[in-house]
Every structure is written in C-alpha cells, then in structure tokens.
Image (cartoon, rainbow, N blue to C red; front, side, top):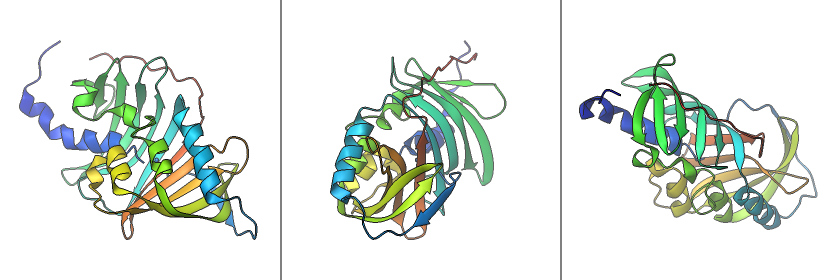
Length: 238
C-alpha cells in the first residue's frame, strides 16, 4: 500500500476525533411522544439498572445528532453499528463540517485500524484507531455510556416518553465533567453538564437515548437501538 505523506493525513485528525468521540454521547432521527405521569419509577434505581445493562452491552446501532455548535466538534450527524464482540469494530457514516463546508464520510474500524472514505468507497488507512480515537470508549464500562449513567447527580424522573416504539422514563440531572470528557474529549467540560437519559420503562431498563448539553442551546444527543444484534464489519479495500 502506498504510504501517504503525514501532512495529507494530519488535517483529518480533529474531524475523526470528534467523529468517534461523538461517543458520546448518541439522535434527532428518533420518533417520540412525551406525556407527564403522576407516578414514575425512582430515577436512581433506573440509572443503576440501566448502568448494568449498558455495561453488558455487546453491540448497538447508534444515531447521533449535534444541535447548535460545540467547539472542536464538527460532527453534525452520525449513524453506525458498533460492537466489541469478538473484537472492537464499527462502521457507519457521518455528516460533518470541514473547512466551512458540510462533508459526508464513511468510516470503518476493524482489527484496531481506522479507515475513512470522504467520498464514495475510496477508503484511507488512518492506522491504529487508538491514535485518533479509541472507539471502545463508547461501549467501555469505564469510559463510555455506562460511565455517563453511573455519574448522574441530582437525578429525577421527569416524564414518560415513547421513542421509536419503546416506552421510556425521561431522567434529568447532571453528569460530572470527568465522565463527559472520557466519552467525548472535544467537549473539555470543567464542571457538571446537564444530562438527560431516556431509559426503557420495562425489562432490564436499556438505555434508549442520552443527551449532554455542554452549553446552553448546544447539545449532543444519541439514540440506541438493535441492542446486542450481531454486527459484521468487513475490512475495506484501500
């Protein structure tokens, strides 16, 4: 494979870092309906159960949407399938702002290597994924969405809402800065960030949707579906 000059790859790094970090945390394409209710499950219990369910998650379909503008975070939308079984891998597409223009890109992570196609199926081998962003952070019990759920404070159950056919309880509160920065380093939070988690009302209380708002009017929202559905990722030609 032909070696690419370092200066041809380097400008992509900030974009790719934001692309995957936008693991953090997952979705404006969801269909939802909200209603208030007088009696709701306890927020702390829901968060505890959902943390356990998310820690045990093996694969997921993720849809992420950025509302407003977050510094150093050019991603607008991202849709992909992620897995950590039998090994960390993922694939999908994203829309991001690059040099003042909106750009569509596809990505694949397999065998620890990151591949990116800014147009069509012409992928670029970016080398070790961990050198750009560790995609394992999204499903990591210690750094990902499970850690976000485990670090909610002042949490309360707000209402019920149906998202993509799943009845959820909307839990509002704040997420400590360390948890936010572990899953989404570009945010660089210095204090607790307003957070919302939509947790399935029934079953093992899967996480259906999560939202972080690092500044007023600017947020990252992620919607999860196809929990533990097998994901097959194929290494692209380069």
